[in-house]
Every structure is written in C-alpha cells, then in structure tokens.
Length: 615
Ligand code: ADP
Image 1 (cartoon, protein in one colour):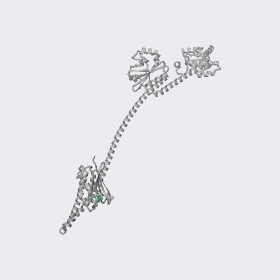
Image 2: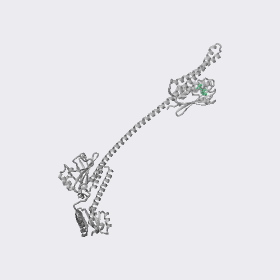
Image 3: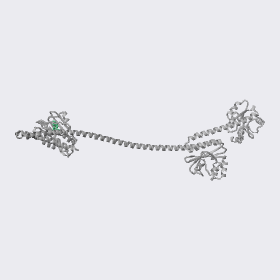
Image 4: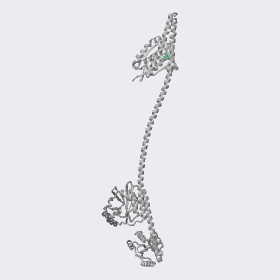
C-alpha cells in the first residue's frame, strides 16, 4: 500500500493529487450510498465508488484491489457496531477506514477510532465538505500511522539485533542473527546466509523460504536446497576482496552476478521471474580468522533507502562483532601465552631461588663448620697454652726436687772426701748409706722423669699385648717384697686367674710399681697392703688398698695435677719423687682407663684404676 501510494504522490510529497479517489463503501442501505455519491460528485472530486452491501462482498472486493479509503457502515445485516470493524481488521484489510454512524451513536464512533478506524462521519450531518475532508484526513492519518509503525519496527529490529549481536560468541550465530533481523525488517524480501565450508565450497543456511521453489531452483541451477553445500566458483579470498567490508552491495546483474559461469543469463532471468525477485543485494562477507560468511538478500519489492541503511548498520555491526570476537580471541590467546610465560618465569625464579637457598644453606653450613673449626682451634690453642704453662711449672717442680738428692749427694760426698781420714767406719758407713739413698732418690726421679718425657715426646711406643693380669701383679709384688718385708708389711694378692688384658706391659708395670711402692711407703710397720681385681663387663678395675696414713680430701685433689706439688716423705722418711701418680694417670689414660682414690686419714687409702677390656 505504502509503495503503491508513493506512485501517486507529488514531488513535494505533501499535497494529495491523484487521477481519482478509489472508494469502497460498505453499506446495506442503497439510499445512503446514493446520498454519499451525490455529495462527493457535488464537490467536484474525481472518484470511483465501489459498493459492498455486506462483509462477504467487502472481503471479495478487497482481495481484488486496494482502496484509497473504505467508508464503513457499522450496522450491517450480519454484523453490528464494533464487531463489523473488528471482522474487517481480522481480514487484514489495510486501507484507511471512515466509520459511518447514526446521530445517537457517537460513543461507538469514538470506540471505533480506538479500534483502528481513522475517522467517523455522522450520517444525518453529511455534507459534501465534511465527507471529502474526512476521506483526505483518513488517508493522511493512515500514512502517518504506517510511517510511525514502520519506524518503530525498524527501531525494534535494530535494537534487538544490536543487543543480540553484542553477546554472540561465534561467526555462525552472528550470521544467523543478521539474517533473522533482515527477514524481520523486510517482510517482502528474504535472506540466505552463506558460511564457508572450505576454500572451494560454502554452506547455505537460513534458506527455508526457498523450499517452495525447490524444484525450479534445482532445474535451473542444479542446486539442491535439501543438501545445501554448494561449490563456489571464486575462492573466499577473492569474494572477501570484493565484499569483505560488511557493507551492502547491490548486484546489478541480478542472479547472473551469482551464477555467472554456472548457468546462462536467460536461466537466471527465468528463475528471477519464478521466485518473483525484484532486486538482489549481497551484504558484506564478514571476516574472522580467515573464515568468511555473508548473505544475499532477495527482494520482491523495491527496498526503501532507510531500510537499506538499517540493514547496512546491522551487517556492519555484525562484521564489527566478528572482528571484536577475533580480537578478543587473539587477546585471550596473548593473555594465555603471557600467563604461561609468567608461569615459566615463576617456575624458573622458584628453581633459581631453591638453588640459591640450597647454595646459601651449604654456605651457612660451611660457615658454621668453619666457625666450629676456628672455635676448636682456639680451644686447642688455649689448651696448648695452658698445657705448656702447666708443663713449665711441672719442670720447675721436678728440677727443684732433683736439687734435694743432689744437694745431699754433694754434701755427704764432700764430707766424706774432706774427712775420710778422721771418720770411723761407722760414720763412713752412715755417709755411704746417705750417699746411696740420695743417688737412689735422684735415680728414681730421673727414671720417672725419663718415662714421663718419653710418653710426652712420643718416644714411648704403645705396644699392646695379651697379658695375664694375676701374673703381672705377682711379678710387681715380688719386686717390692723386700721393701715391704723390711717394714714388716703384709702384701696380699686377692687373685683372679681369668683376667686377661690387651695392654702395654711397661705402662701397666709402671702404674703397679708406683701404687705398690706408695702403699708400702705410706703404711706404718706391721700394716697390710691388699691388691684386688674386679672384672666388670667392659673393664677391669685394679685396686691397691693399704692401712696407711691416708690422705685428706683437699690433698687428694692435688695428687694428679701437673701444676701442683704434693709430696711427703714415707712413714720411715722414705723420699719420694712427686711424679709417680702423675705418670700413672698419664699411662692409665693412654690405655683408655680412669684412676681415682678413696682415702680416710689415719685409716688408709685405696688407689683404683680401670683398664678397658678389648672385645
Ligand atoms: P711420691 O710418692 O714420690 O712423693 P707420688 O706422686 O707417687 O710421689 O705421690 C705423691 C704423694 O701422694 C705422696 O708424696 C704422698 O704424700 C701421697 N701418697 C701417695 N700414695 C699414698 C698412699 N698410699 N697413702 C698416703 N699418701 C700417699
């Protein structure tokens, strides 16, 4: 109606000029028809009036042609009041309607306006002027209504397409929405979507509307809509070069522009006539990651330029959406790669950090070891200094002790030498005895000192051998037996035949000799010395017990210390060396054992030492 109406419009598009008005009057009263006809004639307007006396005739006439206006009497034999208007609307009659009512029925007339009538005329007040005015007004009003409706429709299609496209994820959905939107917009046209199948074939989608012409299309083109994969004559890249901009391109050559080289021009024209194609547009093939899609619009009427603009807006948007998706995809890929790279970097950093931590720990361990070694060195240095100081003191003591026997040796030998002529045998005998004692005492000091110095300088080699302990003790007892007998001291050995040691015989002898001679030396005449052995699990303990003078607690502490001197003459003034116990401790420790004393003053002492048993 709209397009047809265009053809009758003047250039300025405002004034209403046409050869004649094409009027349908729906009226069961022929008298009323006559009056209306006369009134229009009297206005001088050119017109053709068709009269329908009932609804059936109305539908029949409207099916044949379009009327510029319908004058509708609401009170027909088969239908009255608003029902009449509603029935006409159901039949989708699009011409503007002016309802004709009676004097007393203006309310119905107003309701009819709400139901879609453009105007109303009151039958009893009809004049030539108001009929014509009402007809023109209705036609103009209908035009404006259609115009608004069309724009509202365009707006709704565009906004729904925009909303849907913005959330589309893939090319197929974008293409589908684009085709659907165009179909919604143009009810007199149809769209087919084209998706790439591969470089040489394409898939035709959303083309169900072609089904009625299935046979004709197949006959002319060989293309089967039911198997919609078609060979393409040009590669996608070429097509994209021509159309890949998202814009609308009118195919001037019609179908031949599509089927050139496949079917001839006449066939194309034939097919266009069969399907009723007025115009063909291809909307831009849309590009994404080397995949392209597009569509072809087949129109059976002239597409107004504003619809073309809207279609182009939609196709451009679709193209932009695909580009955006493609960019987003690239972005996601870049993001993914970036994250992967970051992960790799983090992994490397962790790896390096772990390496560094390990190296650091090793370094710290090394540092701690070094500190420990340095501390140990310092400690041993200190011990060495202490030991040296102790030894210096010790040598002072020994040198001082050596002086005594030598002073006595020198004194008594001088006395003998100076007075040998005047001295009687008894005095000479006494001096000779003194000489002998002093020499023995000096020798004993030297003997111990020699053993000591050998042990300190490493000259005294440690020679372990299997020793029968009882036998060894017996030998040492026999060495001091004479000394004990002279003092009337009993030497008792509490034997244990089964103890065998693996030790250095010389060292054990030195220890036993010193302990036994001390026990005799510091025990009064008539006393007793008992030697006993005890076999523990890991060691043997040898004890020398006497009934002698004993040693006080504070003196016990001095016995084994190198830096202190504690030496007393024996009960019969026997001289000592002050070295025996120190040497004994040295040897016991060399054997891996211990030495200790239990003593009560005036009751006696027990000197114990242990030697580890070899497994
Ligand atoms: P010396 O006996 O030659 O003086 P020692 O080192 O053997 O040197 O002994 C040091 C001192 O320990 C002795 O002088 C003595 O005073 C005391 N002593 C050692 N053994 C005994 C003992 N069995 N009873 C009492 N005193 C002892």
